[in-house]
Amino acid sequence: MTRVITFGTFDIFHVGHLNILKRAAEYGDYLIVGVSTDALNFSKKQRYPVCPQNSRAEIVDALACVDHVFYEESLELKRQYIIDHKADFLVMGDDWQGKFDEFSDICKVVYLPRTPSISTTELIEIVKER
Ligand code: CTP
Image: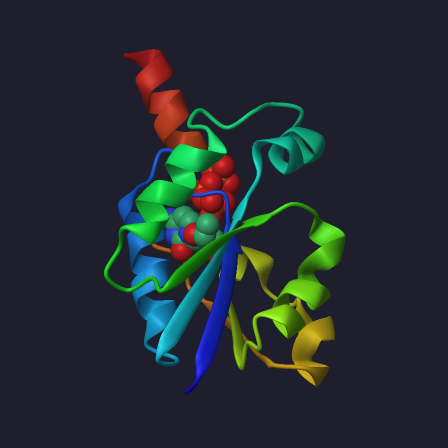
């Protein structure tokens, strides 16, 4: 069985999120998703996601293409998460191009093109302007 892992916040779930998860799932038979915790987001961006971690994880877990969800609590633990979940592939959007090449000693690292013209940040801006 080929196991695929990916990571993200998946706040205000949108079609760009759906697309990357569906495409990541095509690399194997079992898709594992690390959903970043509220605390991790706060430490990175000094703001909390709009949707709390349990809601974000519940939405991702409900998708047909997703087999397992866990909380990503720290960026420093990525190597450990990949090992613990026995991932054969790490798949990320190409906004991360090159950033995870250090893990190519333990899994294949793949960057997929982002879906154009949509992001959580953009959605927040659009809603604010209305
Ligand atoms: N992603 C994508 N296409 C988009 C938006 C996101 O493929 N249009 C991918 C990212 O590359 C990442 C995953 O979805 O692998 C989770 O991204 P996340 O940061 O949670 O979503 P964004 O919409 O990029 O959020 P933000 O605007 O806060 O950065």
